[in-house]
Length: 559
Image (cartoon, rainbow, N blue to C red; front, side, top):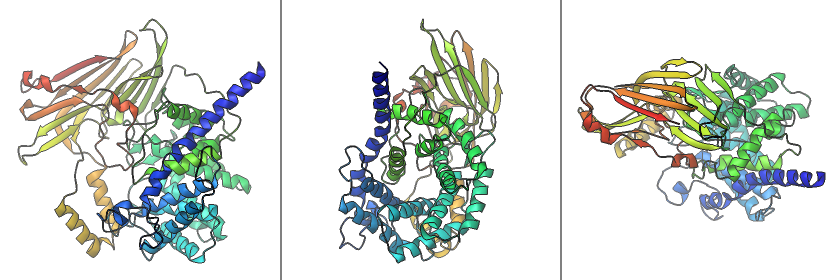
């Protein structure tokens, strides 16, 4: 009997471990398709297919060169059903990718991502870390590549980008640490220490790391991955920073709150609307803090059940591939049982996120009802009954005819703001105004202006341009005349949610719904598909004709 149980546990462990490798390996053909694999091509090694193949943009994205790392890991790891293991072509293409990055970068080692002369910190950090790891995994020995990586590291060490993105800062610390190890140089020690202080100072007392306007559990897990590696390297040389251990414990405990009962993670209730989950750091932390391993097991089970988000986008597909492969590589052997969910309420007043779990016997059997509610985003929420998502709501969304411009604008209730809130045991209230969605699109005229500005002025002040674009596309809120009030009450073993919306004349409103996956800011890794988005939105457009000009719209639902 004991042997049978042990075999079952081993089989389960391998199943959970291998799902990360399987998901990663499934993306390798796509990554290879994105790369120019012709050694006689002038763009040999470029992974931006829009540039080298379609020729629809006038510069290559430096972020795309990060794809060399998934290839190097696939080449070096003997994963189950890995047809690329020790395949010589992958070694050639990985090395070519670093060389192309060297040839296409700016003289100071920086690179562009979305527009020329952008000098993007995130793209430079992601790709530098990938180059360092790839160089080592493939056993390369080329002084010009090391010199190039040193220039990029020098640029990152002194560059300060606009906006608070802790994951970028953590990536830079890790990249500088790894390059120092590879080259035996200490010239980045000062920059590493300064950046690490920034990372630690940007961790809230609740455990989350700042991402623009608040807590984003998805990017939070990437920061955990970086810090966990830094701490593990410190342990190896008996020089670990004890502050990192404390920060990681708090960060892991915070992440555990956002693993959904069905194994999915994050979503539109977060500051950057992401479903990201980077598991590698949890394996490393799990060596000395086993609770981290239970988080990975829950997410792995969700991946096996098809609950993961799709990140097979041409621009971002590499991030999860290398992180998943590292997770397979460092998967821990002894794993604690996944804790049984228990009723509890967790209120994060700084993040303004509430997680409420309570028992219900509405359906003649005990069910754990989980509510995850973002009070800084107008009351965006998800509700689960046991392991099933029963409601996903991203607040009101209105299509409004703008009399001045003659165009249609989108008013939404899910933008970050300081709303009026009340939080009691069985009653939660949120009030405030809808905001205009950030839906600025590129036009021919805007594209020409941006190119002219960047070539004449922006190349000298790229961070100023980036800051302006962030204000247009990401941060801040422009209020509308529409005011909402959302009430959540626990009644009869279920949540009763009532919404009221008012704002004057309804004749200018073309359509209205309570959406399920609305996001209205520009974030690269948001708006990915996840199965929960198959939930049906509540279309209220047919009620517009019956509303008098000043009459509020009232909606009441039970979950």
